[in-house]
Image 1 (cartoon, rainbow, N blue to C red):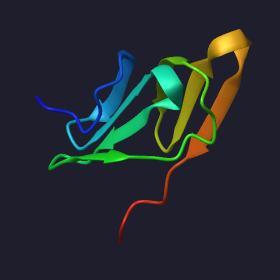
Image 2: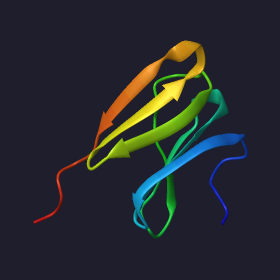
Image 3: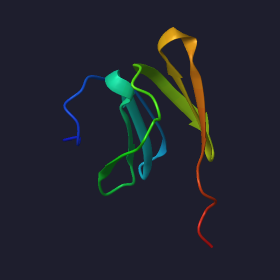
Image 4: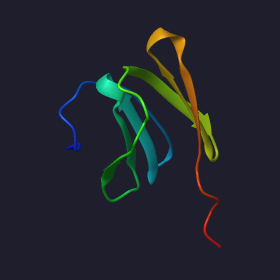
Amino acid sequence: MDSPTSVLLGGVWGSGPRDVFAVGSGGALLHYDGISWLTLNSTTNSTLNAVWGQGRISFVVGQDAAIYRHIGPPPAR
C-alpha cells in the first residue's frame, strides 16, 4: 500500500481496518481511515518509534523516551 510520505516508517498499530496509525523518522505521524492515509501534525521533528493504544486513546513513543498521547474523537452517532 502506498503512503503519502517517503520517510522511514518504523511503527504501525490499528484498532481496526479503518483506524490505523503509522509513525517514523522526522516526526512522521500518519492515520489511515479505511480509504486513504492522512498526514497528522505530531508537533515534533524527532523520530517516532512505536505506536499502540486502546479505543480512542493512542500512545506514541519517540526519540529520547518521549511519550505522546492522542485522544481521538468520539464515535459518530
